[in-house]
Amino acid sequence: MTKAILLVEDNPDDEALTIRAFHKAHIANDVVVARDGLEALDYLFASGKFAGRDVRNNPAIILLDLKLPKLDGIEVLRRLRGNEHTRLTPVVILTSSREEQDVINGYKLGANSYIRKPVNFDQFAEVVQNIGLYWLVLNEPIPQGVGHAEVA
Image 1 (cartoon, rainbow, N blue to C red):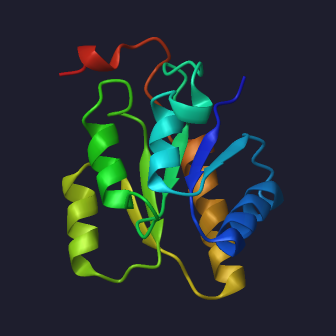
Image 2 (cartoon, rainbow, N blue to C red; image 1 turned 90 degrees about the horizontal axis):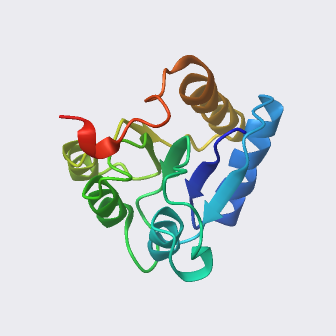
Image 3 (cartoon, helix red, strand yellow; image 1 turned 90 degrees about the vertical axis):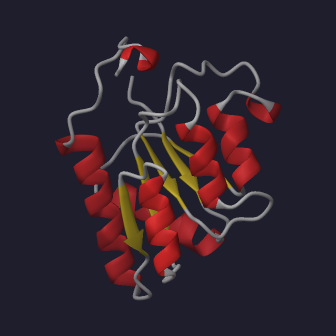
């Protein structure tokens, strides 16, 4: 069973483009979309409409926009890094923000990567394909069953 990709994105055009780019790259993982920060936390912590989801089955990767309704991406990152079940889950910030402080805060809070969304459609699709290929194919994930709390 392949792990899901959690896409935290409030822009429907960027959501559709991201999903299309994954399909074009033959990445078969299911994509779960959270359209605001609170919905992302509900998914990650199995609450709200995701109550009953097994919290031990973390997504393979979280693609996190920063400019989100209800709860911004920096606060989502802060909360997931503060939880033993999600602190090691790979997070790629994928945002249009050009604020240097967002880059600094993202890395300080444990983001694995920070990528600015290209404006050009083809470049954006290429970036998403490369993210998927790296994090889902090339990257060696933490082994299944390793307790996140056990890591020093």
